[in-house]
Length: 110
Length: 290
Image 1: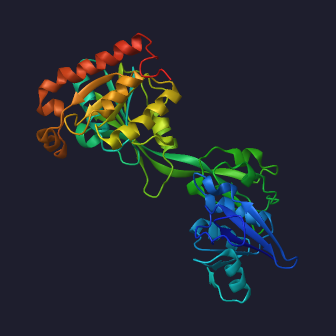
Image 2 (image 1 turned 60 degrees about the vertical axis):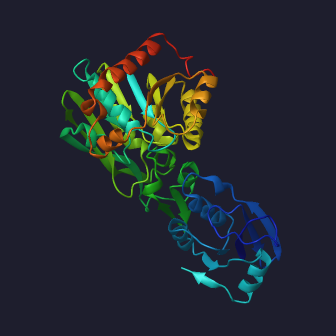
Image 3 (image 1 turned 120 degrees about the vertical axis):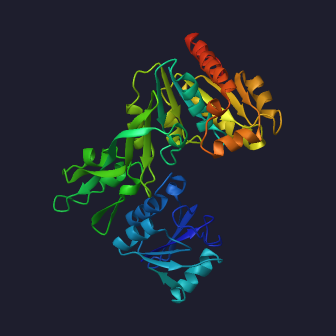
């Protein structure tokens, strides 16, 4: 299963970015293959609909869960439509967020 | 001649200049006034027109016929405004982000997208004395001004004097308002903020290839940096209006400078003549050297 975490930098020790649509990076982790990949959020500078563009990019990569600070109403509609579950994390590194998520400690945003 | 009144900074006096210019010219030449500040039209408060015609302005937004849709994602890929996403085997549309460009319907390989009208505001026309008055009024909750501004500008007319009251800033609605004008009056104030935003506005009109001149409002306050900038850039300062508590009081009551203080009539009429001379000289270079 692929999970995406919004991040301020391109690695596991970067802080979690609280904004979903305009985060600088997504850290993608594949829990089955145990691989980690950082991708730049190309939609971060969109005039409008950044969250929709970000959601679409994650859908296209087969992401099934998202960990972030806040998601706007348009983005959450797209993510839910795609059956992607969204979890809340702030003030921690991507690594810590992943650990807490795997332990089931993060709350789900709906 | 089409003259747009714009400013980088808000609240510098665009509407003051535009309405006083219209009133100073009224009776001398046919005048048409376009209030393109559709998010917050306010020129009617001063010109007090009687509206005799109103119509709804809409943009085409996509309507997806799910039976025909193959979920190929083409519509989402061609949408430049992130107004379409394809998720969970269906197309999700966001009419509030749609610019009505029609690309999704045009590129859909299975003709699954039809366009339907989505109302964005009202276009109202009327008369204020002998001035023909046109106003766009955007619906609350609608984020997209340019299509409505374009509708206002379609009512351009062929009057000798067309005055366009633009919104503040330098973004799409302002570009849409100012584009196609013969001249742009940039209204500013002599403050660091006024100068900062004036520079952005000058950059915009130069990009559009429209000659410009500056009007300094509340000219007796602040500092000299705006005028020094204009001098260095070769931009003519066409008018300076001093700060005067009486003028502020006049404005706050919905009165116009030229009506309450008729000594301003020849000043505004002369402003128009100055602009006319510059446009006639084909003075594209003036205020537009870079």
